[in-house]
Image (cartoon, rainbow, N blue to C red):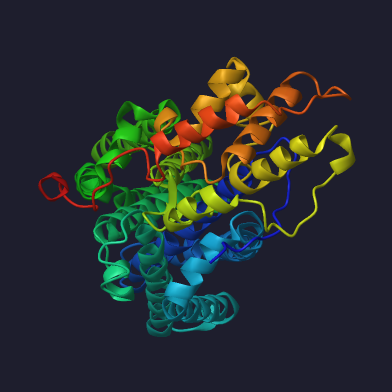
Length: 472
């Protein structure tokens, strides 16, 4: 059975992963704000209803307007944008996720609809409702928002730790080993994000006196205290993810180690300021400092999401689908038939290539490489392979999963591999108008030997996700 071929958009010098990654980070930050914001509003509504913080009601109405305008509107737009970009960049991955979890995703959408209805009802009528009804609406909004996180978290964590799926069915994949630590971690992150944004909003309320703003800030700051549990949750998460994924973060991949350090460093700075400055010393936080802390929270989210996506390499769904949307079983078949033999899509600017071999190489690049690489832009192959000799290109790509173990195996035959090597060499040479065919038999024999030697399995011995004792 042949793999499906999808038309994939080209974003020029911008790597496709950066497009969806950048949009995804922004969407996750807004979504976490919406979830934590509901919890924070329930807390402030309680303070207002019991008379412990009279100014809480005035803040609550203003904060919710801000949440609706920012999180609802931009969150909805970026959510649609996520679907739009994923089906262009990695349609097979999103297709597998929808196929396996369509009913769970439908449940998540149902909770999202409840969240939106409850939110807009409070936005429209909250100011004229009694406290008990306001609380019911806010609780409905908060529960719907958190359960939306609950369902989507299971799908996302399944990509790295599929658990007993597919043999055990959908639910064994949904309640996978990293489900609970990632859910609790995201819940605490949501609470902290909402508290920091609340501090910025409070400083923007010029109709309140400084003592009133100080009391509101101190009340919001308590939502940062659960950050004390984040190190323990982080250790739990790292214990249950695959051993090779831990290695990428702990030095195996410089980029992932740096982004992991960014997430840890930003979170640590926020936690120290919150626990020591706000909760212990009860400092007043002004608008500039609150905005800076929000920026640090966004940086922590960006670093964490980059790592979460990166540790799945070389897969998008572990042991089921490689990052280039080819399954492990298909690699062996494509080694015999060729990966683009049945690709129905024409090559853009095909006349720019001097011969058919280079055109074949360009099609192989498009099918196997272009999801994660560009030619001369972000993560460009020209930069990554430019210092390699012709022989090094041939051997390193033939043994790709061993050259770089976070890369999938090359899923084509010797003819396609040589075509890809020639195309990269031609591109590095400045795309001259004339380029000879590589028709010597010897390189093809050597390439086939290297392909056979490399095999079709991933570069690292993969064990199921679980604690180290289970991995052994």
